[in-house]
Image 1 (cartoon, rainbow, N blue to C red):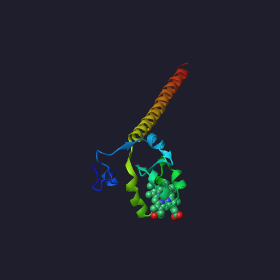
Image 2 (image 1 turned 120 degrees about the vertical axis):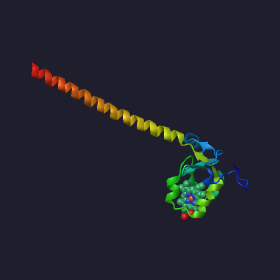
Image 3 (image 1 turned 90 degrees about the vertical axis):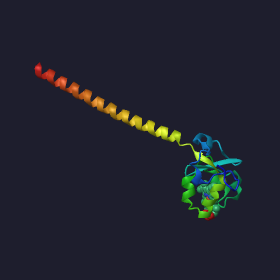
Length: 139
Ligand code: HEM
């Protein structure tokens, strides 16, 4: 899908489209220089290189977030609707969520294993305790 304006950048609402490019966090991290600066805002990836010098809040402040998730800083400044509207010009794709989803399910799996181990240990200790008390009674 390409927008009528010919910018080639789909609007954030159109991101369910199959033409969307996904970037991993690892890849975004490498774009952290003044001549190549990407930002993540609300799981969307923006190439802000051409905007750095024009940013009303200064270059340095944006560079602090270059190659990283700038959602919190972007929101905490309370950017105007105009500033939010500008984002679309720099949109290049979406943050790849697969890794996050995978690591979350892995974490859940581990917590279940931990729970199961505790349960098994409790049962074993219970059985051992029973055997021990029985043995003492019979002797
Ligand atoms: C592509 C991303 C960004 C765009 C399009 C953008 C745009 C703007 C615009 C248009 C303003 C003028 C005030 C307004 O309209 O709200 C502004 C101000 C400001 N921005 Fe950003 N900004 C971006 C990212 C960031 C980031 C990541 C930070 C990091 C903290 C930041 C910090 C600030 C600050 C501190 C001001 C206040 C300037 C002042 O009022 O003195 N901006 N930004």
